[in-house]
Amino acid sequence: MRDSSTNFSKHHNMILEDQMHDEFLPSHKEPFPKGDRNANPLSIGLLALLAEDFRTHDRDFLDPGFWAVAIHRFGNARMGVRLKLFRAPLTVIYKLMFTAMDWFWGINLPYNTKLGRRVRIWHHGGIWLGARAIGDDVHIRHNTTFGILSREDEGAKPIIGNRVDVGVGACILGAITVGDDCVVGPNSVVIRDLPSGSVVMGVPARQTALWKDGTTAQREKIP
Image (spheres, rainbow, N blue to C red):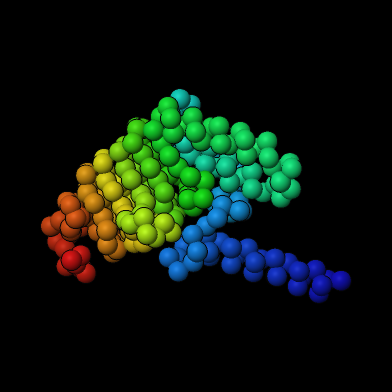
């Protein structure tokens, strides 16, 4: 009995580790998520996750960014209800809240965009976040677009790494990856992969003279 219980526990832990590995390493090679499962972070419960999001938005109950993230979390959590009959009223509630957020506050964050922890949406208006994935501790400002580069490939959407800072009016488009700790300057258009630590600006976005840590850029350059 003890061996059987131990084997089950190991098997369960292996499955959880695989899920968490997939959670933090999204890939452009995979089909775009259909939104048929709960894609909230596995490492924290829903209520604790919402409390963390609340703190991330300066404990401001009226902050539209907090509500956009909360609606996104709810949209994913409802997919944990496997029976469609029981999930249907939750889906109606989610769609009403999602539409209201889009119409009144101008923040469009689809629930099938994989969203990390402590994501901060500053201000509101003109925000369309149709990325494949957004990592942890990402800061996003108004008039920002994450999405496709061409309507011929609607699944070609960007992956945003951890601790990325996105300036006002930035566009990040296509099946590209923005590495960890990048800074995307205001009104920049990013259509190529960015190595971790990049600081870019312009149309199209190009590396500036300094990296985020303040040292002279000696690493891989962005064409």
